[in-house]
Length: 109
Image 1 (tube, helix red, strand yellow):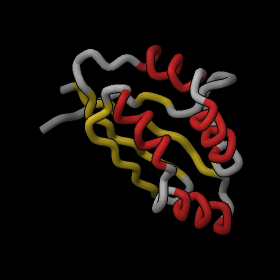
Image 2: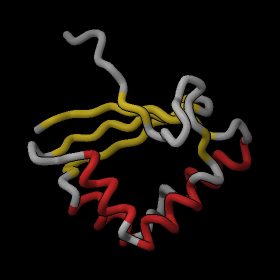
Image 3: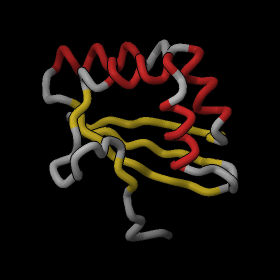
Image 4: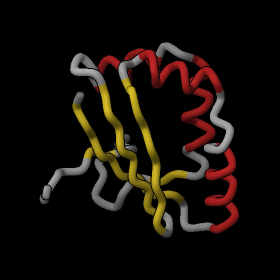
């Protein structure tokens, strides 16, 4: 299995952060199905302040490009992504249109 770690920021507003976390306590079933059918076997999201960290374990054949293409064709995923963008904001160094950014591993023990 491959592992990826990604980062994204939330808007720095306690009420919005609370709402975002509430949505993630009851993620829509169509979103869970989309994630799993793309080859993601494990996904966890952590938060500190308004910074999010996502850890994913994926099958060898997983592709971010294929996932993005499938997401574009799925109206429910698009609805979820639009809703989540009300709470999220790009990292300061992100290029236009980038959301979750892959992190580089700099240490391992």
